[in-house]
Length: 297
Length: 297
Image (tube, rainbow over all chains, first blue to last red; front, side):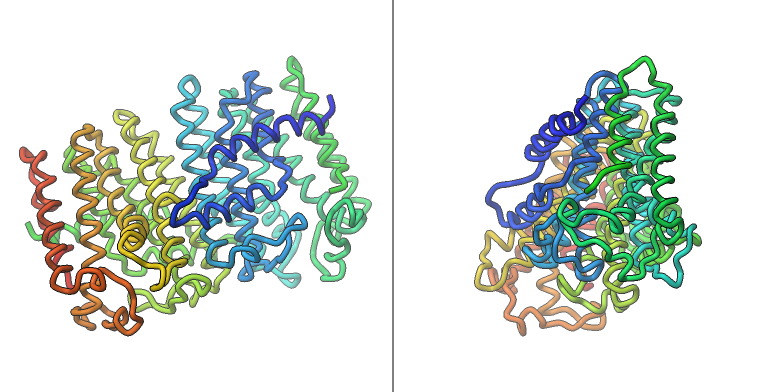
């Protein structure tokens, strides 16, 4: 399997679904529609929703039971980026080489566009209930999984801890807390919710969660590694900023060599969790683990 | 019936439910918990969730089917106030005589507390699905009603149109759009969702919607009237600011006398919609219409 081609295929499905769901048209609030679309179609890799669709397919042979969940996860991810980039938060002017939402639309509309995407994500998941007739119980569990991962016990909690922390308060435990909640929680939910929406068994869900936890952490450590040894052109941003800012990262904790070791270990763990599915084709998930561990951007 | 005592009784139920749901405890993100609780327990009248509980009771004799919906509506209302008060939006330092959220916790935590309440509102409604066994269809319709009213097709849309408008662009149509969406939509949803969660029939829901539309608009016009003729001490804020700022309001459109006429008319319309329930006790809803039409704060 060619991972990149496979991801492209599912990215198109996600993009079409997002285009269908996101509001448009002339109305007194059309500026917020425009701002929501700006960030949703700003070139995201769609990693999380692709994982959701592929997990659903792994469990029940079809991605459709998880399509609303996948679209919602991308909206949640995008809203969090819009709010994180605000001057009151990380104050970032560029993302993926484009001006951030508030640089284009102003802070007020950026806040509202974020709120709008967060609200629409839940509306979308709830609308999906009626299409989940055979698997309603699992589908509702999937919504809960995503809701918890994006809320104060997940992503918002992690972001809170992140902005309140600095090098004087950071330690291994807090760094793990921040990453587990700010980044990994939604990646883990992308997998688990895909499995739940597809009607996965408890045993399957447990293994999917193990896989999700491993690749979520590996993804984050790889970020820190790339900031040290990445290629500026491939990354689309400058490297070395963590070192310049004396930022407490996994490299501070483990050093470069051990951090790379750690990602390899996590990759192996992720792949081991897949053994429960050995009657199915798990190539995508194996390749995805490798990609996340060795990715260059 | 004594409306004030009746509202106190249901306010206690709402407050207990909110206290149960809102996160607390020591954790790396406890600052956002604190900020969420600060605004939730800042002295709100709980008008919307009380209406939701009373509507459920009107339809099925019990408020409990709508309790999660009611708590969620108050969280949505509160998050919108936190975000609206931000310097990037209306830049208000005080609300109900207390410093606004960002004045106490800073802009970043205020943004996250708003996001946290918005997310938690949906988590709460979704958690309620499993307690809605007999009336699940109506309950899910209730969640949809609230989600639409709070999102870009409702409250967020109205706030967008509001911050983009000024006296040079405002006209009757746009003023109505802003109020219908920014304020009335969630009030209307408070009633309709209470009825849906309680298993109301289509005819009942239609009449509840009529009632909600009428009191929602009346509520807003009364706000404009109070800014002209209210008592500063009863309102807890200065009056006359609309006139000083030359703000385009219902008084600009109708003049004071006709605006008062209009609220009386809306009050009558609201009460007429209740005739479908003439085998039930609708005293609360009749008294509520009068209260909203003649309220002094």
